[in-house]
Length: 389
Image (cartoon, rainbow, N blue to C red):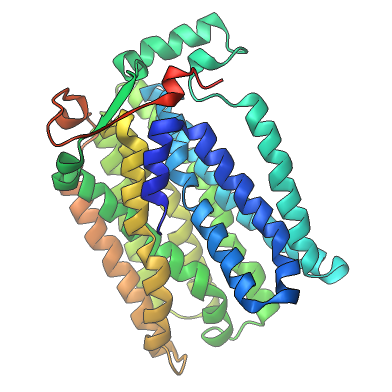
């Protein structure tokens, strides 16, 4: 929560490649250090885990800096959702793998193996990834021309980048996107932290069965995200819907479905219905990711990494608040207590849909194109000046 905004600012300044790569590499390095730290001091262990979180916080905003430079407007949804789906799919695949590794090789093997994989990945990332198409020696002339023509002035970054902080903070469109981001994350964090407990206490599943079933919603979420990105871009490219209409349809439609399924879970807590409704609610959230998550790029491509940093800072709050509130609401873990948890999630989805539907836009905002330097923070962009090889 402390570093997303910093990550977005740094990505705009020195390039998303460096920020994202260093974020993953540092997280991987400290992951490898975790088992030894457990033998020395609990305080060292806590410090290492905190540092991991700080470095990991810069990664999502940095992705937007890269997508903004590479993705033509009619391909933003699919490229962004493919990228974000990878994080959820990785979580789903890691669950059974971690169980097998911990059982056969010991718990420490998880940290050594996954940390080492991350460090190897970083080397590959440094070799093949470039911040801008113009810096990629492997890109064809035809593809480079297509990206340049599609992005137009968006791809022509000057040696100075200025962020209109005041206009961004006062923009209803920005806050509509951030509120939608917060709403989606409330349901996500509530379920990812509490779903196994709910299945065990509320539905009487064994912990083993609950752990397996808990992965299903996130598998569906990953698949839906991949489909939704393709569908959103297809609707735009055919001229069927405008960018604004696509964002509102996908985001508000997903939130409406999530509102219904969360409310249904609250009042029909039989195992089959509850699992089906929760899986549908989380899975259909994949359509929302073709709404709010891509919307940052629509309204201000050059400032997308900073806007994502702002949004992710606010949207991380549910990860702190939801478990605390849930623990307070379900002291006895009865169905009536769990019902309140699902109703809260349902209401938050509904409020998010209403605010997003009323205030958002898919058009680049005037302040994102304004060259006036008043109320702006200005700095040199070494990534552009050096060509960021």
